[in-house]
Length: 318
Image (cartoon, rainbow, N blue to C red; front, side):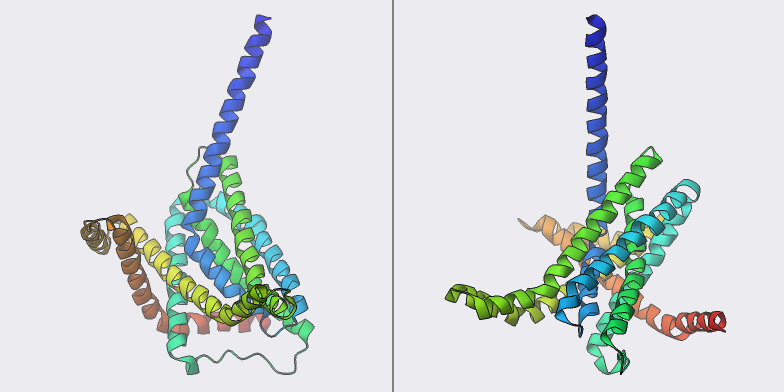
């Protein structure tokens, strides 16, 4: 009997240990996912544009195709790469984060530039292209864009994860990948079908209040999409600037970061709203730094990096 009790004791201890491990994994996955919030918001804001101009019946299938491509990007391509990086070259994580942060700053700054100078944006769909081919092109382009954003998400998650074993890190990254993909593309699916839902309510609603609600959804969806895009751009600049500043501090340069911390400390002294004011100050100054860096990167990307990429592509095709 004592042996059975001892065995049950051991089982209970193992269960408690497993529960603690699962709690730790869930907590770290949530923390890692929250760190990638800016990229997630931008991903949600960017994706709906890929269904514009295509039949309404194809909107959800297109979103599903992009979501499957995103899961493939994260779990099959990026997760093993992240584990190899963590095992053999952890010193590369900070430079890669900074590279991704610079990309976010560039993208955010370019979006603002194109908003202020719409005539400079010459992205035009090719003429005389059938809907099936256009859908294929849109999905391929969305999955390529997703790969870049997913790489940044996975790198941020990896940098935020602190475990004592590879399998825990793998589970945390996999949870982050699945959760973020579900949030992003679930949100996108709701966004792209919201106007259809509103129109249906407006036309078929049995009560005046439901018809009014449908009309309001149809009326306000463009403004909602604009707001999401604006929030996404601001989040990109904030997250990108923050990543770059933390990376600079990692390499021993603390001047800008210390100045931002001092400003946040002053803001934190405000009565009642001190914590909120400190956070807003930090986020705003990080975002302004990201915007300045992105504007500096724009001519470099367009004059040097993009032509170099096109040259390499041309050489490969030849």
